[in-house]
Image (tube, rainbow, N blue to C red; front, side, top):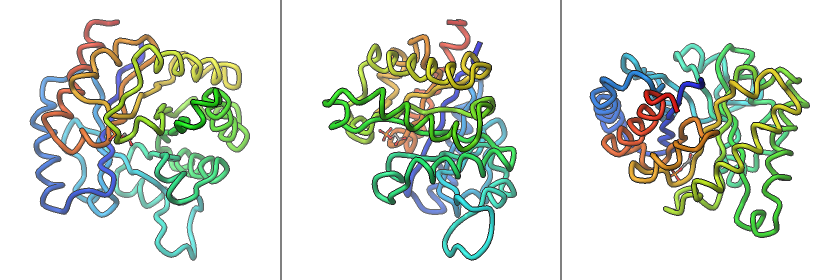
Length: 253
Ligand code: PGA
């Protein structure tokens, strides 16, 4: 069985003191949630605070290059030094606001794996692409770009997050059955390109997950947890989401 994973993507929010307080509150709330794996992804400068005992640490982005004259970039090796275990690559905000292409995202994915960390590849369609019936095509291209760059073993040690762009930060989560259909498609696509990994690959749903809608989303067969934005900034809400994933795991569903 795949262990559920809930990751908090703090994006560019907070200050040093609020980051400290949020880490402490998440740590306190997570006590007793033994079945779910919980990871926080604070902004780069706050990675040095580390994650509390029992909570994993992730970064929100990474350079596509290993080292050198790339002003303002942060390498995978640096994130490894800060004790990151996970790195988000290809978040839709990076793709749309900062022009990251599938090729650049695949290079980042490779950098993360080269340092022994786990890339969390974000995939998902825009509202327009969904309306035009292109959801599967877009996602397949996003996955294939990684397989082309990294090889068929790409997803043996990775996480995929399905984040429909229209659901991010909008308060409009995908309907659980619709999300499940896409998660199933993602797992089949990985099975076609990298058979060994598909059954054990964790596929997270992201986009307006709250404590209230998490149980129904996580009850779906191919949804193995969540990548949480806005709700990750509120410890109580975030822990409510973690609890929903923990309940799924402890029920063995
Ligand atoms: P949201 O963001 O939970 O605020 O919709 C999700 C994400 O961007 O990962």
